[in-house]
Picture (spheres, rainbow, N blue to C red):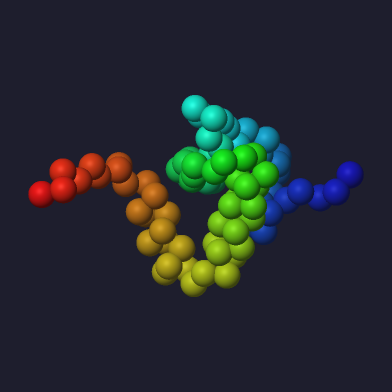
Length: 82
């Protein structure tokens, strides 16, 4: 069986199968921090989106990653258009 550890992980490997979900016929994935990303038209396109997200997180400088994670953890602001 392949080693599924990520860099810096030790111990029990966390479940990753619940990352994708469908809501009103649109697909989303959840980041490690629990933020939803989507919508995508298909599960396949959500998988591609996740691959792109993970590539970005791997290549981005720590300060940029930290700002993205911080922004994703903030409650969504609804603008009134004023």
